[in-house]
Length: 443
Image (cartoon, rainbow, N blue to C red; front, side, top):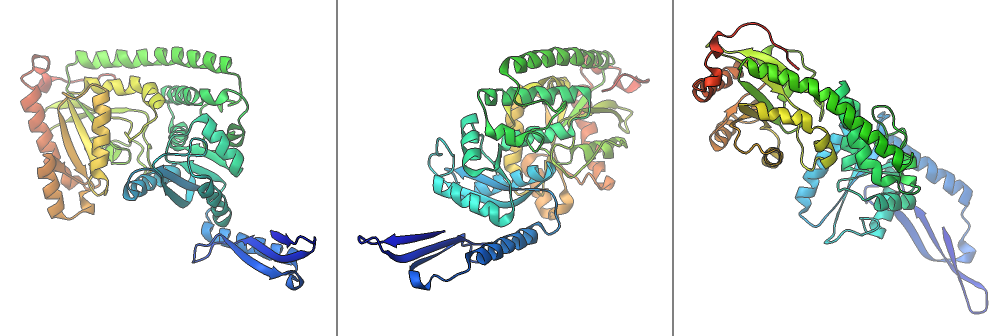
């Protein structure tokens, strides 16, 4: 861009030349030359623009380094500490990775109040647009929830796709839901979340259709009218009630057999499915990704004392889970109320372990499960020092294990056997637990 000064006599004065810059070690986004005499403005601008575009492409390719995934800039606007925001963005980066998106950069802005229209300040948002050109990103992911108006305003100003943390989580659930019940639950949560966006035309939605944040079971058209969306929600709720009736029937059959139930809970990617496989020699899907397990699994587990229990794996928890998603999965989470003991699996090697434990406890309180006995299982002890593991055991009155090392499970099995025998064997419902045999329906 070139701006010319014009004097009172109408004659041109000096020129001001500005251009964007590719990524550079100084972090500069543009170059400005002020007061250039007009007679010295002899640059070949067409060649300069072509060279600049070639350099942008080269730096974008360097960032990608062969990675063909969609690229995003992660954004957090917070009145709190920068350290907490960095931790939250690190988790958002893991979510993006689970969704098949590469986090090209992270932007944190400290503001006492969010901008009501753009969330970020306007100047900061313009810097984000330039940064997207430098790193080759075409998607903005906000760590905070956006209103439909904010999403629309940001998309129109930046001409980039815009989603928030909630939409990203919904997209991950859409990719990982495999059972009929799971697909119904996810589509229901998506439609309830997207319903406010359907008032009027939204360029934000038109940019999302068919991509990250716009896919789901059935590839629902996002721009249908609100009445049809409400009809679809009613239909899905009816189907979900029908599907969950079968789950309730299997639960009643299990209860008639009077077998104790252990439920594995914990933050997403803490190692719950790995622990289930290790304890029961099962082959439940295990991936080093968030929300790899959505559909609950139940297995029988026989202890050395000839004590038999049912052990179930559940969907992972996370802070700030979308309320519509929790509501949609409530029929699945309600199974936790059948549990006689909760195994709270914790990633002991995660620096945000305490925050994750509190997030899980908060959800359990919301599910009215304050009184259900629980045992903290400190997983991934192979990633921390033995002294640290021992201190964590004492602090949380738990058991440290590595679900990948069966030798470390002996203490957990011994502890579980003692707890179940002490707390449940005297209950009249479980009087014949050791003598029970035969099969029964499992989920």
